[in-house]
Structure formats: structure tokens, C-alpha cells
Image (cartoon, rainbow, N blue to C red; front, side, top):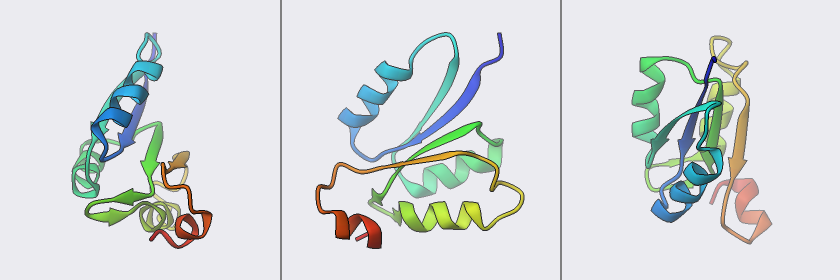
Length: 96
């Protein structure tokens, strides 16, 4: 069985744990990153099938990271799921 390689970029340990529990199974190979820099390092090792990306990271902005990926023809085919625990919609749009 071929695994789908999923990279999860989330700085909150508890949220990473929940995502891991939800996606744990026979179909997914999970890589967890707590920072944008850890994610950048993972991207040099090989391309994931899907990226789950927090919007607010301690060392980066998920919206900007998403835009960089989507503007790069070598990786723009990778689906990205943006997420945030922040409740203020205007803050999410600006990445603040």
C-alpha cells in the first residue's frame, strides 16, 4: 500500500497531537513540524503529497508560506490545507 506523505506545520503541541491521532493509520506517513524553518528543512528532503499549514507560526506566516509554494512551479501542485485556531477572521486574512 502506498502511503500519502503529509507534512503538518503546527506550533501548538496539543493541536499536532490531535492531528496525529486523526490522521494516524495505514494510509498516511506523517511528518510533524513545529516551525517554518523545520518545514523548510523537510521540503529539502522530499516533496509531500499534502501540506497542513498553520497560519500563525512563531517564525513565519502560513499565508506567506502558502503563497510562496503556490508561486513556485516546482511545488505548486501540492495541495495545502490552511488552518488556524485564531477566531478573528480579519487577522487570518492578513496573517497577523
